[in-house]
Length: 386
Ligand SMILES: Nc1nc2c(ncn2[C@@H]2O[C@H](COP(=O)(O)OP(=O)(O)OP(=O)(O)O)[C@@H](O)[C@H]2O)c(=O)[nH]1
Ligand SMILES: [Mg+2]
Image (cartoon, rainbow, N blue to C red; front, side, top):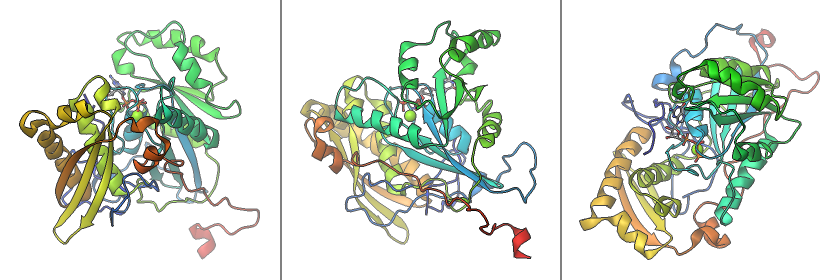
């Protein structure tokens, strides 16, 4: 089942949620092209409403601190909780999560600005043994994101029995992280470890693999340990101007998140090979005064899967549409008319051209690079303005 990541009202770039509700997805937004065919409007979500204004810092820091900014890749094998952690760190339900492995298929930037520091988190697909072109692209995105980032959070799942040995697939995923990176080992799902003492036993196991910059135990689901993790990351971020406005939550457009909300409903409601064979595109996106009209296609890899998604008498498709629409309305802050169609696109995940059509081409959402301050270049803080 899709897990309930922490939710807030920060919304993707450009989306200004009105009437923020307690469990609404937040809206951010990066650059990707997924589902963009024929879609108009729908910029990326922004922070700025609701929780975005809540104080997040544990202790106040000097306002004249030099600006820091950097990219932080969340990397690990599938299902360890990368996307749940992204949402917890942002305080916003940005990325979809589910108990199915390979839920995340793209790089998704989540931006958090706290005082002088801007964190640009990059959620990535889980590193796994690829079975098709889509899987290979997902791995490439994870590896490429780790290679380009300033800091890597390498996430492992330690619940319910803290492991005495490193899982081979964790070790394999860690090989995707270049040696010269500052890597923070994040031990996730500690809420599932009844004997916390066992976590200490895990340390030598993982430390033998690599010289980690720090080891931080967290529960992404309970948002336990995330503040400490932010402070640890901050120490490793370089000085530099913030590449994004401070209220921006992501660089993906709202329509990307709408397509993900529909895919999340499919993940929640279907099993076995069906969720893995589904792609979602936005065919039309039209903002009107009081209503946003969105036309979505759910692409299935096999004709037999079409019937499963539609369900008896169309019940399944109706349920998917109703639930996704409710979330989309919270995201956009406006009434939404959501038209969901199902199409069979055989073997799309192994077809290079179809992958591009379905939004899985290129490099995914590539984060902006920060403007680094050169020697002698003016600072932009208040002391220079006076
Ligand atoms: N108990 C517990 N469950 C968690 C925690 N973090 C994540 N989960 C659950 O683990 C499952 C996978 O979470 P995701 O965030 O989708 O994992 P992921 O690493 O992004 O997975 P992929 O996108 O498939 O690579 C979901 O069912 C989450 O609810 C945690 O701290 N504690
Ligand atoms: Mg994920």
